[in-house]
Length: 237
Ligand code: URA
Image (cartoon, rainbow, N blue to C red; front, side):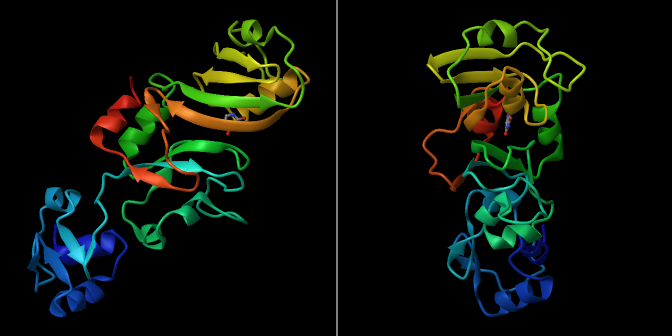
């Protein structure tokens, strides 16, 4: 891809600004200065971190998939009032083409693993009901558990108040008197919160820590990491 187009697609500069940066000797590929903005650059080299702008390694080109540890209070939306998950990413990423989107959503109050990608096929594969990767959540409830949650949630007949279609079986493993791990095989609006509300309880904290075989790991809250191909494959294990 032409260097000026690439830098513009990655949100660093307009094509004009990219040309100016080249003339100023600010762009290097594998340590060599690129003087012309119309020079073609191998995307694989960029992916390996060989392209630098003003001494800083340039971001990976598309397809890009990242895993963010979402703090509470951030909304999964491109435009909404208040803090958005995109505020946690480099500002220039707002101008990336193709655009980065969240893979499904977490509620504003929910924390933990949030995947974002600019790869539309991958996004659909992850959220499609047929290939839907199980999501693992740690749940803490306001009141003590009743004891029959696991049986009810796994029955395939559990109806959330207000829904007319029963839930697919979900796996609930209690850990303490008022907390446990939930594994969901579908993603309905506010699903876990509404499941507990239906039983007269209330979710006080909700944290997603795994999708398929891909765990959040030790990413600090508010931080993200760029996923490698093998990480992405783990989503489907
Ligand atoms: N279930 C919920 O209620 N909220 C989430 O964010 C995810 C699952």
